[in-house]
Length: 200
Image (cartoon, rainbow, N blue to C red; front, side, top):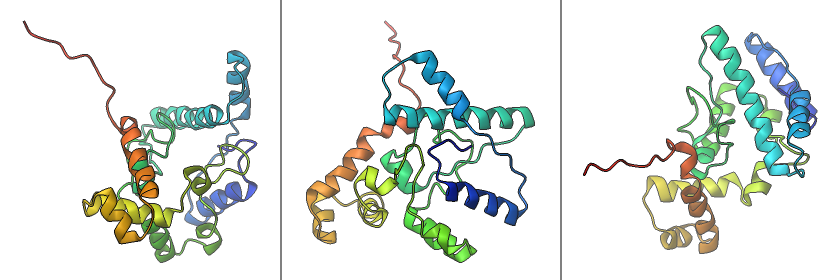
């Protein structure tokens, strides 16, 4: 589901993988839907809001297909993205199953190499293509290699921020940036809050 900000090589790689695996696919450009939204709302343009809208448009389309064909929607989120909330709520975060959801991003790279994914795909900078020249690591402000080391120490080894800073020999500010993302974005993976009734 490309838009004008989808890098051409990303689209070609997607088609190549689908064809190589014998997967039936359909290309649906989302720009006309996006433009109709923007025309209707008439708000000042905001890259982040537009990027999230693109993800939600794609979610709506893919769930329409899934509903019509009695399919499940497979997510693409990995453990790193899920933990720090690097996904669009009700967008690419919406799915029925999350096949690589328990693999850190660096684990996904290793699995990709094991499965024989073309090296040019593995070597590409991770990006959602939601606006021009966007990359995950530039947006997050840190490489996935370092993010995963912090997450592993914090989540798997239950280390405190000061301990992680010492173990990885990095500033505590870098550690805290990732921990803050975890805490700030927990709402994305939770059922919405409801007022609790009180029995008198």
